[in-house]
Image (cartoon, rainbow, N blue to C red; front, side):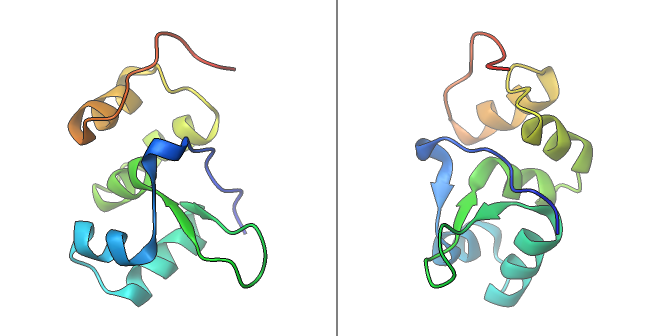
Length: 96
């Protein structure tokens, strides 16, 4: 199992929102989250919290960008492209 990406509260979405955003099924969203570490779950019965940024990257097949995001490189041009596309805040510098 892959470690989840670190995410900020303004990019967290639930499964239902991910389904609507992506046009994919609930099962597909859950599979992508598990396979690529796009979400977190604080306890076994807690709802999945999905990174909208990581989901968008996965939908575009940009797994290199997911790894950059996972490593905390939010000011990398490849990551900024998705943040901008989604209308999310652009960091001034890496937090790592």
